[in-house]
Image (tube, rainbow, N blue to C red; front, top):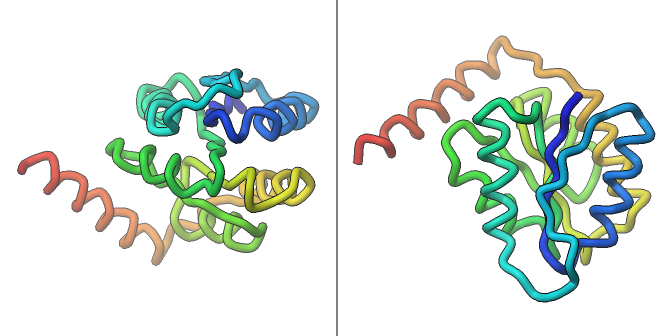
Length: 150
């Protein structure tokens, strides 16, 4: 699988560890940065990973900032993105099974590296269930279409 990864200055170390972890598991990881500890703005990286997904450059994405919230909000502004911030594995798995999320996000100031790996594993190993959940995904797509028309 080809996975985009992005982060802000707070999450450089965690991003590097998650990137290496994913590569060890055989995934191709495209790093959208940053690799600097100098203060930067997370929307740049959230948008970059989100655009790579909708443009078909990567299959899915992992985003990390201080809490995971800001960077996921940025990604969710891109039509077609369903990013979810998770601080534990159960929600990560269900976000894929029920919401077909294409980005998982978490906070480097909130969780440790081992929990981050567990979240990533649960999310990547989960499969979208479709069925009754597709109605809701279609409703989300309808909201996106309405916003395009404004």
